[in-house]
Each structure stands twice: as C-alpha cells, then as structure tokens.
Amino acid sequence: APPPVDQACGGRLEIRAPLQGQPAASTLEVLSVTPHAQWGHLSWVRMSPLTGRTHQLRLHAAGLGCPIVGDDLYWGHAAAARRSRGGAEALPSVRASGGLFLQSCGVAFAHPDPQRGLVQVMVGEAPKFGALRARARSGAQYHGL
Image 1 (cartoon, rainbow, N blue to C red):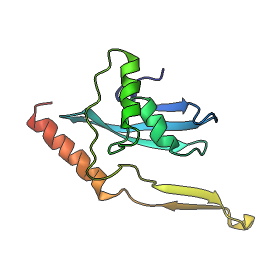
Image 2: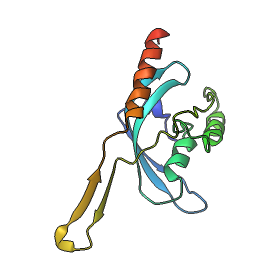
Image 3: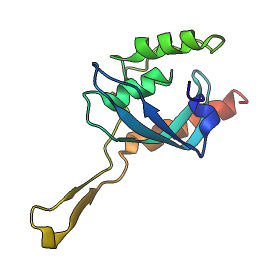
C-alpha cells in the first residue's frame, strides 16, 4: 500500500489502481500540508492522470483514504479505504459547502499543424483554494495545533 499522503510531503506517488476493470494510473505530488482542526491536516497536491478514466483522480485520491475536499460522491469510498488500513484515524464528515475542491490548472496537446508544436494552456488557482488553506491555518493556530 502507498504511504499516507501526509507522510509523503515533498514526494511523489505513482498510483496504479484499475478502475471499472481498466488499467488506470495517476501521479500525486504533495505540495504542502496544513494542520486542520477537524481533519488533522489538509494536503495541497498536484495530481496528474496518466490514463483517462472517468473520475480517475477522485477515485485514486479516495483509494488512498484521502478524498478531495467536498467529494461527497467518493467520501464513503475513502472512509472505507482508511478503515481497511487498520489503525488509521476515522474520516470526518464531508465538507459539502464550497463544492468540489478539484481544478484543472493546465492542459497540453500537440497542435494539429506539426510546425506549431505543443499547445499549452495554464490557469491560476481558484481563490477558494487559498481561502481554505488560510482558514485551516487560522483554525490550527486557534486550537494550538
């Protein structure tokens, strides 16, 4: 089993777990970990699909026992994954307000005209992500975490 995400800070995991009977692979890189009063910690990660399965990133995160914030569809799957690890702390209830905290920040593809090379489109992080991390830091300080 892969290490818990909080223990992989600064590292990169490759997740290979089939979905709907098809091979599926994703990478996960932990960018930062913020203490959180309710969840224990909040990990800011970069995930990339290496294959293209429906809900692949959501299912791979849940399979680690670390669901994406606001993922009410796969939160139960993540809770079960934590229980199966034995000794892992229980997963608190899903945070439904604010929606799913999953955003595509970039895409790259080969231009149909080979002379134009690779097309890359990047976007900035939505403000709700930074706001959630700031609230987590504030709550952690208040609770002395």
